[in-house]
Image 1 (cartoon, rainbow, N blue to C red):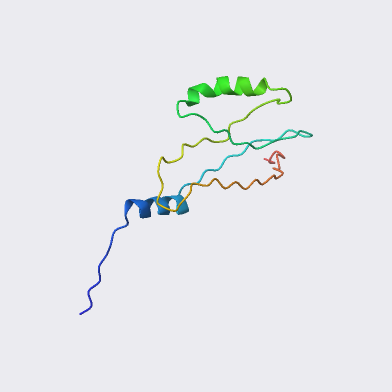
Image 2: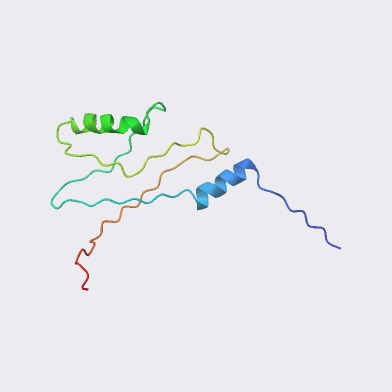
Length: 105
């Protein structure tokens, strides 16, 4: 008779699984015609909360040349990750045309 041992994943194994399969976010915004955009990452202090975002937006717009700011998503990285691993943000930007033609009734 063969004996098979079932092992449960460790905390590090679960973290790797979550990051590999489930930690996803999608967001989109409408783009104005003939407008230049930049996608940036702001590294914020831990004390910054969503309630601070309107003030942050006002201060960013005060910089010469910046016309508007739109928040697509925010995230707090883990304090610790498994050994020999690094948290990485991977972004794929797809600029598309959406057909806004009204549907016929």
